[in-house]
Image (cartoon, rainbow, N blue to C red):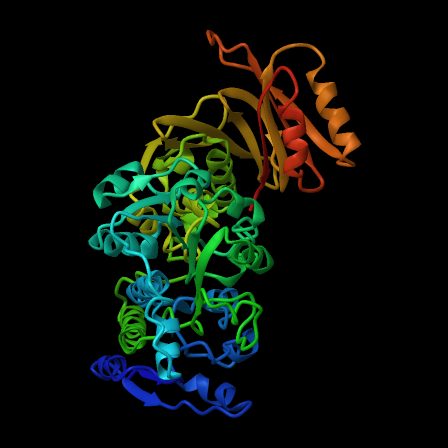
Length: 532
């Protein structure tokens, strides 16, 4: 009988479910070296966050076919090593979304009504009834930054209190906002300007780290109250402290911190700050749900069912992968480029067109790669090769695929269109040469042929003399070396009087360099892109 190991403590419901299908061993104490010695006897293993399934450990797992993580993150699993060995790695990404949303509301109410402070005062022997008078939530505006699963659940619950909800997330369709009765903000600045309470539900990426800083707080209403149950590094602690000291910020409720665990923090002594020790996912139901969902995934993996939360790529025929493999990086690059160039405030649809021999293959990996380029870094949980379609669906983003076995001018082409705010942004590419280098063929309605590199910048400008020199001079002044460049031309019959230039560089182009050029006469737009 298939053997499964439960290596950490989970809810009994998950263990019972596994035992309906497999021979299950439960053992949660693993001195150094013992897991390596034992793991070879199991086809499945269920873990939480403490067990480290490194490449060295997995090297001993000759029979292992499935790893279930009872929780969201899989940082404690060497996913590439597991994938190389054909081991499915699945998590439980929806196990704590309700819990996190409810904790957000708990902190929202605590902040509005000073519940923790009033409790501490009363048990200390004081009757400070007037001191801890609060505010109502009804008719107040809740600003939500990040409108994924948790943000949407928070919105639904806040509306039950009679709050107006204003959310910002360009990676959610306008239709989804309408379905939930939530006002869609065009920019984060619009949220700052109107929010009485501001809650963060953003992923932690280099772009979002330090999102709420002094500049952002200066744009907020006086007395705004801040809630963070997402990621500690989203907030610049020193700037939040300064806002509390000045009165610009009326209060804060924090469940997460830049470094954890933490028992000493400058904000812990503030009377208008509520803190909890990262309890967003800490309920009996969430723990039980995580174990049960991870158990479901192990059963699906070992019984050849559909593994819906795998974090490594699903199986595709070897003959299809041989043809499509070189096009996967291209599709991801095109997705990133399209979303960077798109100017709409909400993504509604992703259109992917495959032309040539690739259209005769199972093109799901290319669709997923393009979605990853669009979504990466913009969702609460990390987008991967399996969950990208689900993440798009829950945000109301439609995926449309078309195939055409005939391609003009090139053997194979991939076209990616992002429809956002009613505007269509299309990029086109192919791979060329013996090493299958990705090439950009179209962007911003102009055509060229340029090999894509990690760092590039694109400019749209009036087609007048001297523009190439101005870009080169500005880059040179900034110490940025241009590796290659191409100027695009508009299709025949186009009335566009602008040109488009794409340059590749050996390093990232700072946004201030882009801004310096776009502010000059004759420049229309500019973008810096780092390709995955």
